[in-house]
Image (cartoon, rainbow, N blue to C red; front, side, top):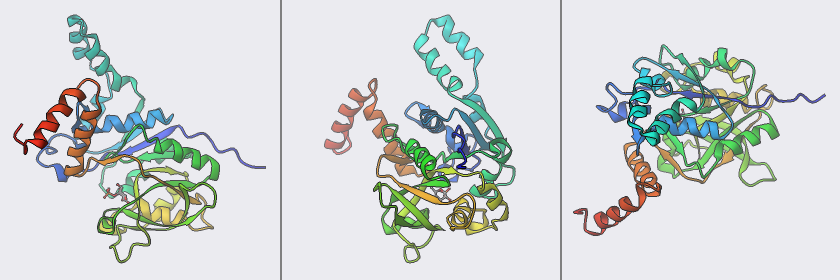
Length: 303
Ligand code: G1P
């Protein structure tokens, strides 16, 4: 009898990182709260999970991350003040984040790496497949990567990673996958091996693992056995490497090849590009902002 795989309903968002690349902005504010136009980066990520049908969201947080909990909670004082003013559009904006999903929080305690952060989700996730979304990656809502990954996991079982081709000089920033064609759809490959942050010479391919995963719950047992890897941390990539071996429960591992719009808000340059792009596309801000941007660039940044 074939076992019916439970539907994926839970998303896990690791958010315990220190955000040192954005100091001093992140000295007293979590990096996930940095605004991308007028919404904190993390809200885009939760919206993406919800758009893919995952309305149960667990954030793995740490010290100094209270603003994240407050952001996804009601703010009665503010709501009352906006109601009194009759400012219904801002009131709706304020309520959006608290109405979005059912939020849960767990603290990571020791920052022992991404694999360890995922392991902190075990009591909440238990024995169901689940998605992991890394907060530094924003995926444009017009390119529904996570939905494609969920479909792939329902079809093949096991676990699914998102892969993006990057130039050799960037591969050391990512997990890297060795892949085989699956034969049918051109954007789905079988992952045969993974290496965390290899040098260009060691990299088995140009495919970088980007921050979206659909994981079989067998990953928890594997993570418990995974020794510290690169940077002395427990790496999710190392556990996935184990799952990718034929005989391990929780596999196989498939990859969805993604060539859509992705912004790495953990990198200052990409963060600025994300803001400019998204601002240009906004109906309310876009027309004025685009006109200014054109002048600014054509007049040698004097506008
Ligand atoms: C993490 C993972 C890495 C992955 C990357 C995607 O690294 O360890 O395998 O490629 O996310 O953004 P980090 O960027 O947290 O150093």
